[in-house]
Structures are given as structure tokens and as C-alpha cells.
Image 1 (cartoon, rainbow, N blue to C red):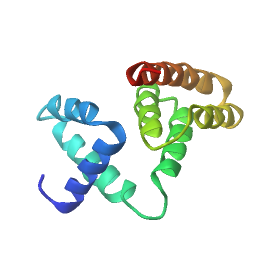
Image 2 (cartoon, rainbow, N blue to C red; image 1 turned 180 degrees about the horizontal axis):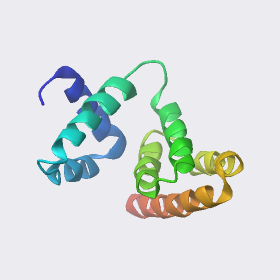
Image 3 (cartoon, helix red, strand yellow; image 1 turned 90 degrees about the horizontal axis):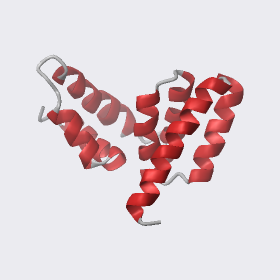
Image 4 (cartoon, rainbow, N blue to C red; image 1 turned 45 degrees about the vertical axis):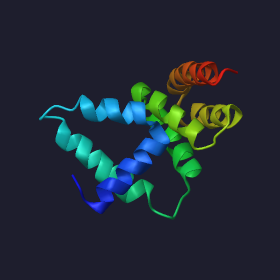
Length: 129
């Protein structure tokens, strides 16, 4: 795209989600889905995530809660990885999901716990822990 907001969004998206994930998303974009990738990169990441009003940890906490409430399992996995990259601990992620169980429902939180456990285990395995 080449504009400053897109470039800032791309850099932040890579920092939170990792180069591998972002590269795959962009490389797999088709002429039909590329406009959506551009929109997400420029506005979600470049306009909102780069704002100074909340830090990355807080944004990750909010995303985990919202995505659980919306029952979006694919996005939960992505944002658990992002939350770990943003410095959230396994214990903090657990607390967030416990909180969502009360306010969003146990079935939605159960799905998020299952997904988060897989992502956390994979992350530990990659780190050699």
C-alpha cells in the first residue's frame, strides 16, 4: 500500500502476531481478499492498535475477552499468541478466560481455554521449556 498508517500497522502486526503469521496472511491473499488484508493492516493495526490510549497488553486482554464473547476460535489462537508476545503470562490469560466464563458463558470460555492451552503448549515447546 505504501502509506505511513499501513506501514506502521504492518510493523505492529508483525511485532504482535509474528512475521510467519503475517507473511502467510498476505501471501495467501487473493485479488478478492487482498482489500480486506489491506483494511485490517491499515485501520485495525495502523489506526487503532498504534494509538497511545492503551498499551499492547491491555489491547490483548480486551481482544481475548471480546473474541471469547464472540466465540471466534481461529482468532482466539492468533490473539493468544499475540498476548504472549505482548507479555501476558499464562496465569493472566487463565484469569481473563475465567472472567469471560462468568460474563460470556462457560461454553465460549471452554473453547477459548482449549485453544489457549494448545497455543501455550506449542509456545513452550518452541521456546524449549
